[in-house]
Amino acid sequence: MTSAVDFEVQLIQLLLADTGVANIVDRKVFPLIIPQGTKLPCVTVQRIAGMPANTLSGASGLEEIDLEIDAWGRTYSQVKDLAIAIRGAMPAQGPWGAHLIQDRDLFEEDSSYFRVMMRYKVWFLENTED
Image (cartoon, rainbow, N blue to C red; front, side):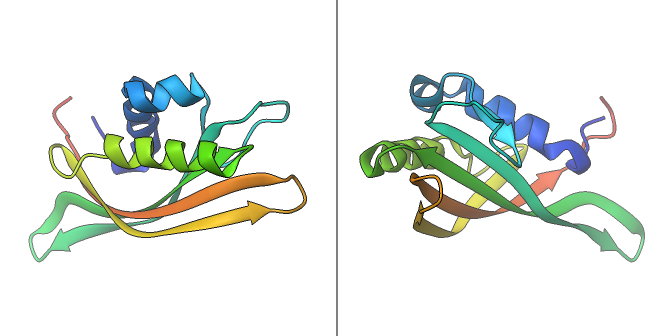
């Protein structure tokens, strides 16, 4: 069964399989936080919320997911290149479709990290026949 609850597993696999992303971060795509000792650049993903699209006859299997993907880097140009690669990797249709709803450039003063925060709206169809 492919569940929206573990959507992040599929998302991380998709990002790692994309050559544009992988060429920049290698295998450094993480859920929620950057592990201590990780060298930048890297990516973090976070499922902000999920809302099942139920019908009068019950569960439809479709879920609306609010997602945040953060590109992290040591330089502004590095993080911008990574953000472009991530945007190129995100599917607009297929088993799930992701649509960018907001992005923002940030600088984390405590760590001197550059970050591009991207928020996506994802429509994910669960598969109960796996």
